[in-house]
Length: 192
Image 1 (tube, one colour):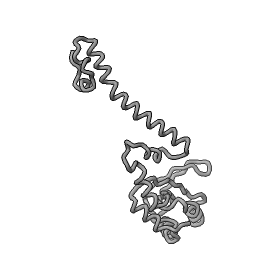
Image 2 (cartoon, helix red, strand yellow):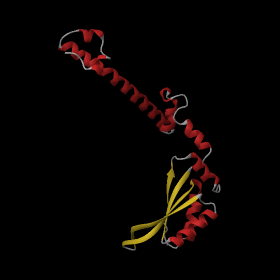
Image 3 (cartoon, one colour):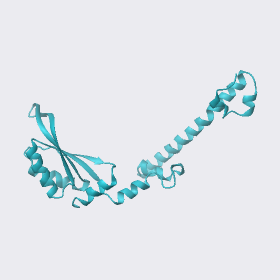
Image 4 (cartoon, helix red, strand yellow):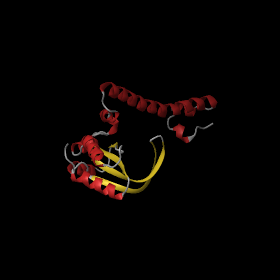
């Protein structure tokens, strides 16, 4: 019984030459071993790299640059170049009751250089728990792009200039994107 084409490549000549089911069986096992061994080697290198990274406190992303099969520059060299021209940045969500409140707060945030950009998203419906019951209100959402280091100052500014008793200020990290845009965030905001 001849072996399927993909397995003939990995079969030793003696296995494919021998007739009968035993030779075909050996060739089939041998043929499957090569890709499996390669996969196990690849996974074990990754596991060792992850273990070293966890022990040294380095991120997994940065530890992979030492692996030769990932290229001369490694995965993180582009990210390192990128980091030298930008700062850690965040997106901050703030809800406001209406368009006028959103424009007023957005303009004061930008004037104070607490953010590079504020998008005003109209027509959201917020359902929330307040004063012991479920509430529902039409609101607008401000999407604010800024430096991570400005979050405390931005939060204080929102609390001082917002009409809600407990305004929403929620931040999310920006983990990547258009490097020119992220440079613009850095250059359009104050340092602290």
